[in-house]
Length: 253
Image (cartoon, rainbow, N blue to C red; front, side, top):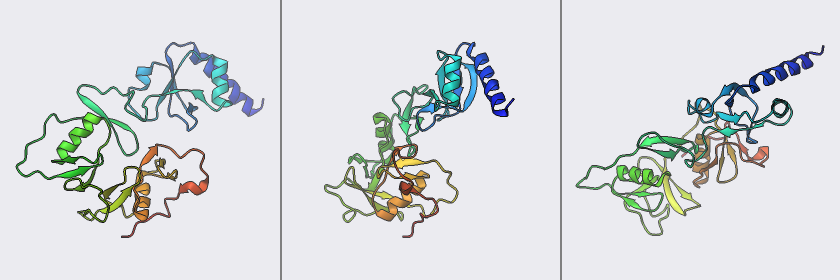
């Protein structure tokens, strides 16, 4: 018998065996097409599959027939699956009094928000990315928790009307970049290089794919335009020319 047929029959037997169990199927990750092919285990409930809170794990109910499951996995581009973690806070339920916030990779995290901030006699004003002045970094973080989305410090001092990179001052060797979406200047610390940052491809607001957030920030500093993450995977419908190579980006002040 041909070796390939042996593999196919073996896989068929495996799928037939596992489908009789209750619960569902757990997958290691969701592919770019939104389907799953890398099998983790069978007869696993949604709660068990997603209990480790990993970003890429996914689950499928056992309503799919054995033949259909085998065909979709091997020949059909993958099985429809439900990601354990959505790239938003809409479906995340944080334990206790924690609040869900998104990081620079659009990954949700459950954090503990402070109820109150210490009152200071001499407030250290700072301007947030929502163009609101805060009396301290603590107050900005409290506002972030209430909003459920990230509010960043864009520069020191009170927010200025019609502020530009020419009218504000960046401290601590930070560089001023223009946010094209908000038209606000933003002080950021530019990374010189990203030699040890792992590859986590992301799509940026310029519709270009970067190997990680660090590489995107280097390109932001080169162009003086603030780039942000729009998707935690490669941009769809883009050619190889739109993929920024990790070897081509280094920042020089």
